[in-house]
Image (cartoon, rainbow over all chains, first blue to last red; front, side, top):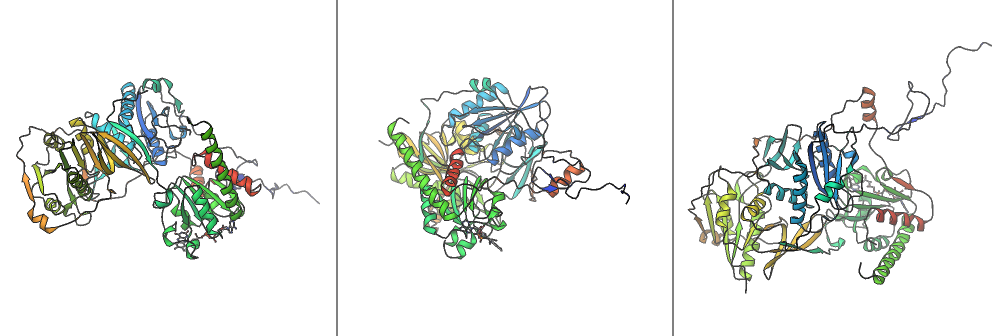
Length: 376
Length: 261
Ligand SMILES: Cc1cc2nc3c(=O)[nH]c(=O)nc-3n(C[C@H](O)[C@H](O)[C@H](O)COP(=O)(O)OP(=O)(O)OC[C@H]3O[C@@H](n4cnc5c(N)ncnc54)[C@H](O)[C@@H]3O)c2cc1C
């Protein structure tokens, strides 16, 4: 028996897992698993004399998607000589190098929940004074940036500005006017307040995002004691009373929730609003106005706890704007697992019961702590 | 002793979203109703001020909503509204406006420019206002169902949020008994528009185009990104009993500051 000269192909070829977790056989590729994450080139401005400044508020240490888009659009529009400086008001605990910020100034004392427009404006003006940025980018939002941006525009009559910008490119901006009946264009102005979803945040490069301590110390602002404004604090609003679309924390039930009372207890202990999938609503467990999804409500909570929900596309459509999705499900191949930032596999009822206990213990521990040192 | 003697509400001409017909601007009407109610409760004088065409049909709707009298500064299109209004607002202790107009540039800048011009503080997104000694206490709207209390020293400008709880009452009798008074003010304002952005309008509306980073990928890369979906999926916890799993969830919520205990 003669041995064949033909090259024998290994029937059990190694699969290459791509970055997105998809298994592929690439015939031309060598037989090694190439699970190497893509390395993006580092953007380094050559002559750092020209600056683009972005000003955004952070919430609980994170910038929202809107703020991400603003920093990314500054980075996309910046040329090789321009340094993108991100001024973040409020504490920041996330890395924004992938959004293209070359330098970062974090001012943790300017939490968006505290009303101090004059101190914030003074801080921004100091940064502008020392950098002399050629353009300033801000999100046109309701958590303080839209307001701060307009206060800035009013104090800078010599700078051109545009608000509610819905389209931006290297040459121009566009915005709706006359109640949305006209689309207006203008040359790229110096101060730009961007509406949400005007830019993609997926960049082909990363930046170094170096914290700039020197700028931070020069832009430090004393709170004026004779300010015209005084912050009296947030009004406590029970989550159960606010509309689902506005809720910040939602506990949502699907077909996998058998005991509605447990879910309601859990929602109460987390001070969360209650939502439901269509099946749970159809079963009569929840009223129709609690339905989340394509034929229900679209929600934008910071935290969405999906309990016993399979995650059908019609349901996922309703939660596409949610920041943190946590799923409890018996089935680790349910589509919700792909969407969720954290999935816990197990029986919904058991985990809900344990969670209620754990929350009660945690609350007890915190209140004991505050009792023992009442200053904080 | 009450320090508020004059409250002025600024009203603009609105625009019907479908027909484009002039009408009252709902947000400005809310501000006016809040102003009228407050003036009544503290017996201050309430004024309604508009800069624009005195013959605008929208103005009579403000009369029907209780304005009583509307003072109009007649201006042509190229004069600076901020300058004109500022000259008329010297005596006002409290100035109320809406948050966003329905006509013109809609930049929501007017209250800010006015506050800067007159040199008085401004609070925006107000849902309710209350007089407290020489300050005004404002309940402010914030997204995600949050509300905030702040106070501001008088005189001040307060921009009312469109969701402010005030009910508008339309009365034809008030519409015909009310008056529109044209003010003859000599102003020497040339067009000194504060933000000198030159807008070119396009009558047809199209979908805005998103800004994207230019990419020079190889054909293979482009194909790979087209056939692979973006779904990432987070951590999956399979092991442990329910108590441990509950702790994992609690830990996640704490790590991202979604709870404060
Ligand atoms: C035109 C159209 C519009 C629709 N609009 C909507 C909409 O707006 N909103 C919406 O939600 N749906 C909508 N749907 C329905 C959608 O397709 C799904 O059928 C629905 O979302 C499924 O709900 P569910 O996940 O609760 O139930 P199921 O699909 O039955 O999933 C239940 C999940 O719970 C898990 N589970 C079961 N028991 C337990 C247990 N004891 N412990 C833990 N986990 C358990 C299961 O593993 C499963 O993943 C629409 C469908 C159509 C055709």
